[in-house]
Length: 215
Image (tube, rainbow, N blue to C red; front, side, top):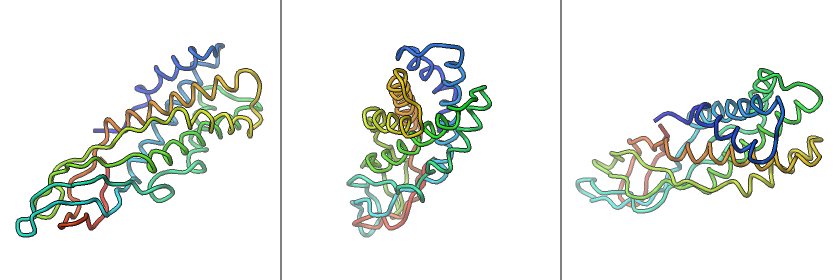
């Protein structure tokens, strides 16, 4: 399945911003900028993501049939996903495209990019490829599933820090951090539910011997 689209993220993001008490003519554009940046970032993540070798495998040593018997791990960024510096240009372009300009626009783009990059980093560190992938002929023969990871709480604190670091303070800053964290958490939850581990991983008895990709 494809990665989450911006349209899947935009409506909830708008709801999170409104529920946090953020109002004004810029809020719909901000929701769109968050959603579009997250959607593009997850497309980049899908293309870079890699399942590391070493997944426990229980396979017949003669026929090569069996299944993975333990979880797999994702390679962390920068090799396994985009970093904040790669996403800042995207976020800046999205903010400008939605008419979000002025002295705070650059800090806002950096906060959006940094929060999404941190979410991908945390997802790679905490999510697992779930056990039970069928193995045939010493190769994984079916798609694998990714475990969803709740990220809102750590992301909220991280986003709050980025807002402050980029000069965005005031009574609305914690509200924005909360809504941004909720939006990005939702985007990664959708990613985990829609993306699969591609078949074709070398799986000799004992442990997988090569990297895997996502699809």
